[in-house]
Length: 141
Image (cartoon, rainbow, N blue to C red):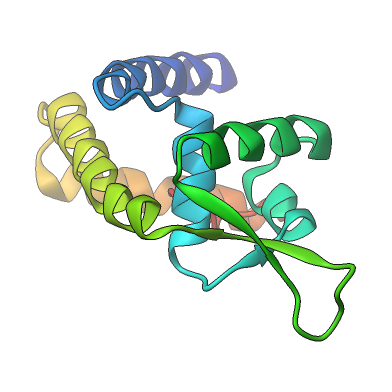
């Protein structure tokens, strides 16, 4: 089952990567942008925990997202040494467009399944994550 889940995940992700490429965004960048969308700002360590990437890779990605004008570093008012990451206005307006691409990708990819079967499939995936004490609260799930 794990093999088939991995193949499915890779196929869905590859199709999504093609859609994101039209916006010059990678899947890992999308995950970071989406994680930030629901928050005013997040410390780097919190983003690391949410997107499950090492801090060095995330720091480099944040630098690229800053260069693109989609995120910014903001000083913590309570602790000047602490820095958080937030979306810029441009980043905040980009995320819904990318989310629409994610929705279209899922619709196309899973269109062969009736809606009820899709719902059962999603419930089963989430149940397995909970039963195995894995994080099922991903911002892009």
